[in-house]
Image 1 (cartoon, helix red, strand yellow):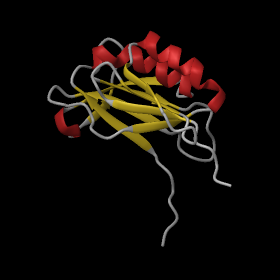
Image 2 (image 1 turned 180 degrees about the vertical axis):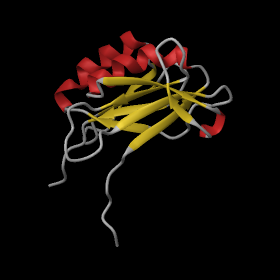
Image 3 (image 1 turned 90 degrees about the vertical axis):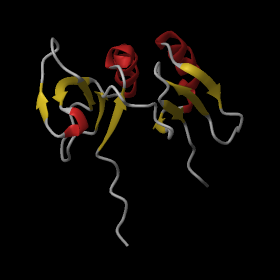
Image 4 (image 1 turned 135 degrees about the horizontal axis):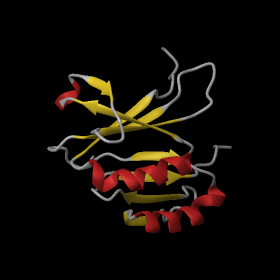
Length: 143
């Protein structure tokens, strides 16, 4: 059996990029994805090219100053027929930042913010402004 190699990137589709872009600009920067790039993606991903801040339909948020491996990134792509993801993407944070995150999520326009009611699983569950399900969690290592 092969060992899990981790994730390279995440590709999210949203119906209107302009509705969520400010949310993700702040959210991903706080998570450490501090480099933003712009792309133009043809419907379905048949072609992908660099774009400018004046004309784009996709943004990507990258780690910076990474050596020895490709930088991880998350892409947000506008696709008019996209529906909010029914799954949930969870991002790891330090437990002592969860309370601060709760306030930040409200300021960013996150919706349906809920705290985990399980003390052994410290987390916040929420959706972005178009309904994509997200989570920040501070799971502890098992003894």
